[in-house]
Structures are given as C-alpha cells and as structure tokens.
Image (cartoon, rainbow, N blue to C red; front, top):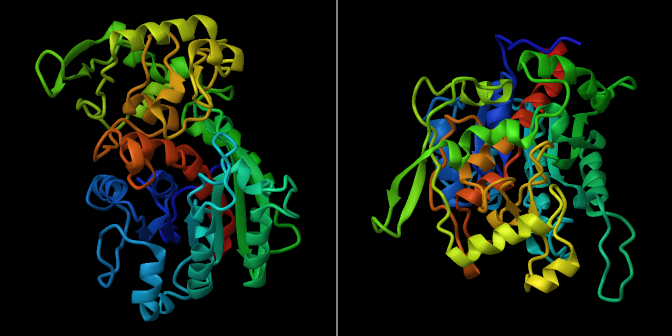
Length: 418
C-alpha cells in the first residue's frame, strides 16, 4: 500500500494532553492541520509553542478566542462552551494520550490516581465537538485490570469503560497494541491504541489496524529506514562522549555542568540522517551531561558489569547494591531501547557509566535534532508529579514517527471525504 501524499485540503485536528508535542509533530508531518492543543504544564507547553506554534513545525490555525498558553480541558470546557460547540462539524480528528502514570505496568499502579480519570474530560470534548475520528493513545496497562485492596481484580479494564462511553456517543471503536519499533522508533515501546470512527463513516470492511500494518513497509521505505528495527547504538552512537569534546554549559567553571560539543561524524547511518535532516548546520540543543559524583560513576560501572544488556537488574543484585528503585537497566546497543520513562536514571548508557542526555532520549523517541526542548532539565522531590521538565517531556511523549504513521492511517480512512 502506498503512503498517502499530503492533501491540498488536509484534515483538521485537536490534540488533547499534548505534552511537548510528539503526537502533533507526527500529525503535522503526515499533512494534518492543527486547530489547537491542550496541555496544562507550562514547561511542556513552552516546548510545544516554541516548535509547533511559533517555530518551524508550525501547522496550527489557532483560534483567536483561545490564549496560546498552558491550560486544562476542564478550563476550556467551562470558559468556551459556545466556541467549542461552533467547532462541531469542522474538526476531523481528536487525538490525545491522557496521563497514564496510574496505569503504567512499569511503575506502581494505582487505581485511585486522579490522573486516571482525565479520559473523562477527553470524552466530554468529543461529545461537544463530535469529530469524525478519534485516536486515544495510552500505556498497555490502560487495558489491564487493577487489583483492589482485597486482592480482587476489577471486572474490566478502564479502557473498556472508556470504549463503551465513546461508543455511546455514536462511534465504532477499534483497539489494539502498537509496537513503536515496527515503525522506525529505536525503542520497544508498546502502546494501547483506541481508534474511534463515527458510525456514519464506518463500514463493515473498516479494519484500521490491518490498514496500519499495510502502511508499515512503505512508511519505512519513504523514511529510508530499514524494515528491521533500528538499534539504540544506530540511534545515538554519534553522541557518545568518547567521540565528542565537552564544553561549558552552566554553573561553576570547575564543578558545573558540561555539554557535548557536537560534530557530526563523516558517515551517518539512515536513522541519524533522518533525525538531522532539518538542522542545516546548526547544533541540536539539550546535550547537557549529567553531573555524576565519582561514587555514582563507580556504581554505574558495577551495574553495567552485572546487568544483562536490555534486561532489568535482578532483585538479588539490587539488594546487594542497596538499590530500591523498581527498575534499572543497561541499554543493549544491538537492540531497540527498553521503554523510556520520565526518570532518567532508569536506563544507563550501553558503554559509558552515565545516564543519557535529554537529546539521546529524544533520539530514542524519534524527535528530530532540530526540535528544541525548553524548561528545566529535571525536577525532584514533591515537584516531580507537578512539573514537566525536559526529561519528563521526552519520556511522556508519543514518538513522532508513531504519531505520523497514525496520522497517515486516519488520512487513508478519511480520503473519501477530501
């Protein structure tokens, strides 16, 4: 199946829970035009605005009635109900990935996490705007049941509750799991995807996930990426410290932060060429190196010697090392990365005793090098659940390549209306 060319009359979409913009970046690259996006964190929205509203990836026709600032769906629903109602019939797609921390199988799952219910706001927006199509992205655990305090499992996953509510609004809903590494992302990031098609547009022959699989090889071919997975070494080997000069970044001259003075190698592989395509000689940002203490470096070396690459450190070794973290692992250079999280010390570099830079994480998520991240690098303590610094922005994002192929999928479904 041939990948769809950008239409002269592209579909219009709204991005809910947009984060720093991975989904929107992908949709824009697939030829979609944005109406507006909703993100409550000011740092994440600053990155979104810098790149996707004011910057080179701008493809939004932002409404004059909506300020270009961080906000919540609830605030928009309360303050602009008339303006939203006027969008009925004018929006083709609502996309979004409600915050998923309470569902994540990688963390401590919490059925009472208030963020779990943010999909309710997504549904309220769908009801008001009534788009032709929906794409809801979440972690695998969104489609898994919780155990209550008595150890008994809930009757059905929350995803099925959301599915039933969307169906009640007049949509035919399809669900499946999408593996990011199948679409050129150098990361084993499996996500639960829910696609809604308004019933007046759906037919008995509509099978979106079969269509998505049919798009895969042409999508990779057009990106000049291999049909086989992209390894983490292929993604980030040009950013290794051993190949780079380190220069001053911030803080004290002697003990402050340093960053990579990036110089591209003479030969770039296909993935690196794709990521660097729009730089035009400029350097990517977010190359600051973590400031590890000597004891931390020695511990990382020990972990690298004990941990099988690509696997988590065993419970036995965690006890021996006094590590209380739920997950810590070392990257396998020959394979796609394990799923990135919002905690930068969950994954160690495959050959250097350190955590990854924000830019290396961004490469693993398939953000191009000319996408600029804004705000603080990290946040600690009680602010961790309240702020979205750069590492968190990247870890939470929909990989742009996945957003793009999903955009192509919806365009194929939508072609008859263009």
